[in-house]
Length: 267
Ligand code: HEM
Image (cartoon, rainbow, N blue to C red):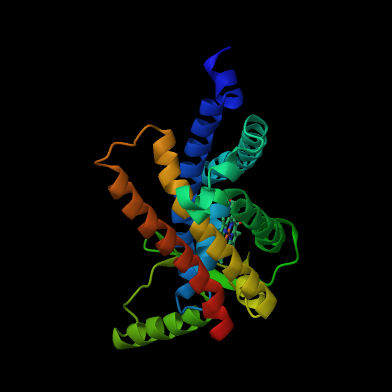
């Protein structure tokens, strides 16, 4: 059996795959929550929409997206296989072992927590990802131009005041001031910001997101520490450090995400 087959069939190999895919997903969460912070900018969604255009059109990011989908699928399938294998190997063992005394609540409920996250992901992908790529989206009108060799994009309203500013400068200089604007055009982008704002006006959706973020917090709390253990980082010196980072990571990531539906709901 080669190392590749072992990684997907032996318990140790499966744990290793769970750890590596889990840590990659943690990295994705950091990027996703940081990017989505653009939602809090008070600019009518301009920054968030431009960020979405960049994320969906950059060839490198598009390639990493496919790796991300594959990682999610491998992580889910491996977790199911590990659960089935563990149940088969120890049919009644846990009853005698008093699991509630021996392990944390989150570690004994990783399957339930993972299932809640999976249900959330199906809704989430349908509402945002599928709508963005295939659905009828609201549209946002922006202006693109080149000024002095620099490409600029701005909202229609900002452009109006920009033009007023240029006119004033031209008048003040007696017509000598040249703004050096070329390639002016109006562009229409998908208004993902408006879609997100609309979704989070719905109380049922906000509640679903909050429940999912609580489940994600507990899932990460155990998953983060467990991943490092599977990778062999279990020295007495490092375990408390990893635990502390795990706590901070789980709370910071999920609080950041949870703030988004709450922000739009209360706005
Ligand atoms: C609660 C706050 C969240 C908001 C506002 C949000 C928003 C979005 C939006 C607007 C998109 C579509 C953008 C695109 O297709 O490029 C998206 C995609 C996605 N989201 Fe979220 N998200 C949130 C939380 C989460 C969480 C907690 C997870 C994972 C557990 C997640 C996983 C994903 C995935 C896998 C995609 C597809 C990414 C891709 O195609 O590259 N999101 N999200």
